[in-house]
Structures are given as C-alpha cells and as structure tokens.
Amino acid sequence: MSLEVVSASSLWVGNYRRRMKVSLERMYENALDWAHLPFLHSSAFSSIDLIDSGDWGWRADLGLAQRPEGGEPPHITLQLSLDRTNRRWISSTLEGPGAGSEIWTHVFEFGPRDLEIQADFFIPGVTEVDRAATGAVYAALYQGLYDEDEAMMLERQRAIDEQAGPEEKIEGSQLDDFALGRVSSLDANLPFDFRYEGQPWRLIRDEEAWLVYTLTCPHLLGSFKDAVIESGTVTCPWHGYRFSLRTGECLSGADCRLPDPPKVIERAGWLYIQGMTANPEP
Ligand code: FES
Ligand SMILES: [Fe+2]
Image 1 (cartoon, rainbow, N blue to C red):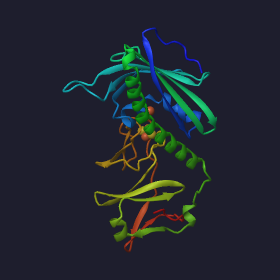
Image 2 (tube, helix red, strand yellow):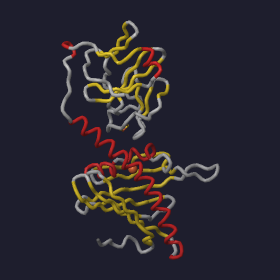
Image 3 (cartoon, rainbow, N blue to C red):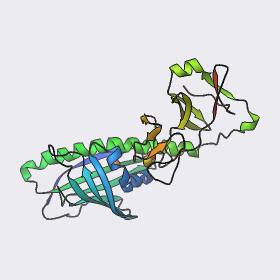
Image 4 (cartoon, rainbow, N blue to C red):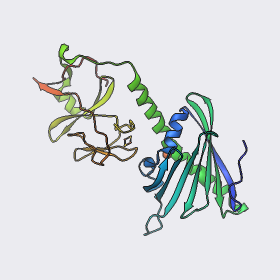
C-alpha cells in the first residue's frame, strides 16, 4: 500500500490495525455515523454539532471530553472524507488543538464479514524523539474507540439478521394467552426479558403498573439491554435518543418511535401475554 504525503509539516507517527468480523457496509456506515461520537465514545468526546454532511462524509464541531482543569472542553473542527474507490477515509482536524492532523484509515476485505482496518496517524509538530510515544497514544485511543465501534457494529448486524429471519407472526385471535409466570416470581426477577414475534422485550414495573418495552432501538437497532430507565424513559447508548416508555414517542425529536408492546394481563396471580405461544427465554 502506498500512502501519499499528507503535509510537509506532518510526521507519520504510527498506525493501528484491527481485524473485525463485520461487513464493509457496516464499516462505512460507522464511519459516516457522526452522531454516535459523544454517546458511544463519551470518554473521548463531549458534544458534536454538524456543519455539513453528505455521501462524501461529514464535517462537524466536536467537543473533546478531556478538559483542562476547571476549563471548558476544547473544541476541534473535524472532517471525515470517505473514498469508496480506494476503500479508505481520511479524518482531518481542520481547527483547534491538533489542527493539521490527518488519520488515514484503509480497509482490507478478507470476506463478506471479515475485514481489517489500518489507521495511519500523521501529526504535525511532533519531533523525531517523540514519534513512537505519540504513535502509541493514538494507537491506544483507536483501540478504545474500536472496542466500542466493533461491539456496536456486531450488535447492529445481529439485530438486522434477526429482523430478516423467518417471520414468527402469530395470529393472536386463534391462540391462547401465554403465561409469562407467577406474579410473585416475576416480581422477584425483574427486569424480565422475553421474546415475542422474534423480537426481544423487557417487562418491568413502573409506578406499580406492568410495563413492556422493546429492547431494540427503532433508530439503528441499538440495544437497550444495559440502558437505565429514568422517569419512564429510556435513552439509547448509541446516539442518545430518549423515548417515553408509555407513549413510545421520541423525546429527542427524531422521526421514529418505539413499537407498540405486546399486551400483558394479570389473572389469578399469573401474568399473561395476550395471544402468544412461543416460550419466553430466561
Ligand atoms: S440506535 Fe441510534 S439512538 Fe438508538
Ligand atoms: Fe465510532
């Protein structure tokens, strides 16, 4: 692979390689997904304000998470330019601390869901003496970011595959109610997760009432499994959209909503899902 010279004042300080069982489609989607930065990568970024975006990539004002003692978080203008022909993208710091830095990420495909990325770090103002140490700092940062990105891409692919799987639609009117369990034992085991029509759901108590909600975010299929419920709302860890569990409405103003949950009914000390036949998963 040959890398063009980025800028006369920038020094190549090192690179980071990682093999991942994800598709090129997921990888590009992740690179173009500017909105996840301050949520999924909250240890590195504190805010993002989009300036421009398109099929070519995006440019945004990005707040960094590490702030000087007592000070405001530093801001940078970052641009990501996607070059599909060469299977690479270039992240350039245009303004702010580290202005002039460029990170070139190339993708090497080994199979439909098997690729390796190599990120090369070109940083201005680094002396030969500091080259290796600076490269190690960037490699460690990228390792942390890709730990989070890989988990997100794998989870999203799993959710997409699950939604594309064989339909398990149930004709509710022809089926008996399905017992989720004794109220006393469910109460002792909340939150209680189960599957219905091939999708994962969670049962909780909210203000004494039973409440069921999806464990899959309607935006890009993020998982709510580890999301904390606050005042009847759930916040997705991927892009920070907040949803009302009672109405399904997206309180962040996005054009998506939670799906209507299956109805639960309590009868003679047991809790039932109306018209369900499949066995709940523990
Ligand atoms: S997947 Fe984007 S907010 Fe949930
Ligand atoms: Fe990311």
